[in-house]
Amino acid sequence: MRLARLVGALLAVALLAAGATFFLPADDYLILPDEAKPLAEQVTVEGERPDRDGGGIYYVDVVVRKASLLEQHVPPLRPDGAELVPAHALVPPGSNFEERRRQNLRAMDRSQEIAAAVALRELGEDVRADPGGALVVGVSPDAPAHGKLRNGDVIVAVDGRTIRTPDGLRREIGRREPGDEVRLRVRADGKTRTETVGTVASPDDPERPIVGIQVEQHAEIELPLDVEIDLGNVGGPSAGLAFALDLLEELGRDVDRGHRVAATGELQLDGTVSSIGGVKQKTIGARRAGIDVFVVPAGENAEVARQNAAGLRIVAVENFQQALQKLATLPKKTN
Image 1 (cartoon, helix red, strand yellow):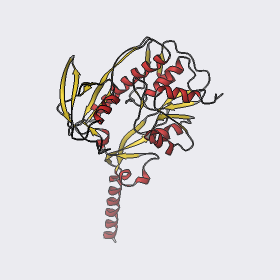
Image 2 (cartoon, rainbow, N blue to C red):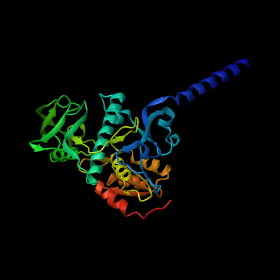
Image 3 (cartoon, one colour):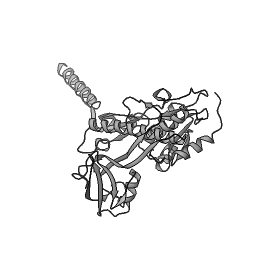
Image 4 (cartoon, rainbow, N blue to C red):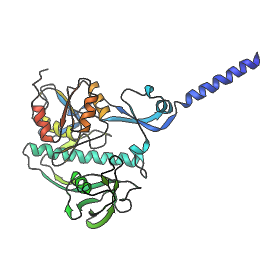
């Protein structure tokens, strides 16, 4: 009898230990929805006016945390809207989370400056904003660019053709075939140099050549008004469109028409709205906040947003002007 009780106790301990193991962190991560938040209190601009119609511009972000072993192996136990991703999808090999966090905060700073330039230019303000090339913010250690390009380099030409924006760089490299070489004119520390870099096929599209870098807009910007945007530790460039829309709202343009409008999309200096990640989670976060309209980049981002909209109105845009035009067609909402 005593032996049976001992065996039972040992079995219970073993089961408890096995259960506890499943709550230990896994190597993978979860990307989770985060509720959309209003921008009005985070944006300060010289000459701003109070909002009188009860609407507002909102930004959306995602939450990233370690998955447990249980969540990794049992998908139904993951929170609603969660996506499991491997660590290397968030932090490229050769980097670390702290460096990635710093890169995201720098990207946020640049997106704020670009958004202010685009918004104030729309209002007819005298903005000096000169796109100066594609700023390198990440180099994959197993890519052709490794050892030739560094973070902080600014690519200003491809095979003699001037590059002023990241999209321009992607278009020029995209004219080649995987395996071709490209000559990149690079500026850093006040000097220029030329690097010949090979290309490889993109893991997402075997017909598209890449050199293995992450780039963002480099620009010299001087604003005629004081603008401050503070989202704390939120990083990345995806709130650029929301920033620009809110700045217009703050300065008296009725952008939201009384609606709660959330927006996501990386804004380029020429007003182009580029695609971003985490759209599924951001759409869910917009729904949870009771958003009326969600403005997203056209194309695949818009398709994913519509798949997860559940009645939320999705507005797909290719540029800032189009966003303003589509929002202007909303019926005026009184609260």
